[in-house]
Length: 334
Image 1 (tube, helix red, strand yellow):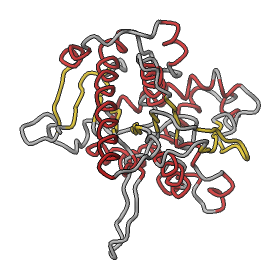
Image 2 (tube, one colour):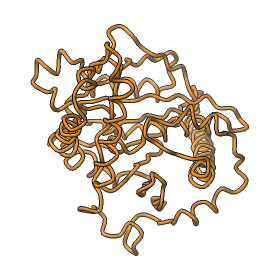
Image 3 (cartoon, one colour):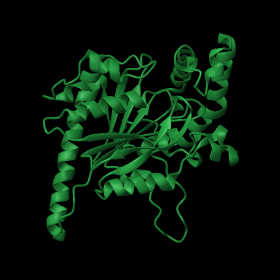
């Protein structure tokens, strides 16, 4: 979720669709219009109100309550069925093996571009899932905390690659997910500060055996080259039970990125402790030029080379339109 600013890199658009038709006859996805998807809500109750939504939405994300009703309630209902099925499979497997292991959390991966709205989506999902009648414990972790500290990135010449796969401590992230999936208690994750634009030394959050874990980040669906000797190299996505890719066209992502940067100049950047405080003092024209430079020379490259190519690996793709509203939903066929 992080790159050269406390924003997120964007995902390509109509430019070069990886799948010519996500809903075509040969596609591995079932395609739903917004209206078709909304009918799948069933009896899922609305457990969020306008005040909740105001607290959960991110800067420059104008999500409204109808989006929760028509998109996120059907998704919450479907995920409840997936979690129930996974728990049943776990019980059957334990019985078959004759073991009595601790519960294994259901892990949801959320990927997508900077400025596409992943943070809002992750927080809304966490709130809805935690309010199921069974009251599950739902944890949310972003991959920002697993970025290498700025000192390391500077030493390795990677500051302009912040947010790219090589800027993350993948080993630490894999160890974290492995411990979570092993059902271990009190697993810690590092904390990232968007104010100082760096990992906070010595500060961690503790995840203690959640029922559901949401892992949000730019490259969580990323793969790497497999070793020729066939040795096992786990990917982050190997630990997922379900994955979501939040999508939008490139021109919209460009617009949202620049708009967010300009709004941050009037809010977070005004703080003297902000890493980007200097950009609150330049002219609007200079700020727009800087934002476009970040987008074109860093975030767009990251998007095209490492983020958008992972889209077909998701179990669910939600495509946003101009008003930030989800317009189509693509669900992987079983």
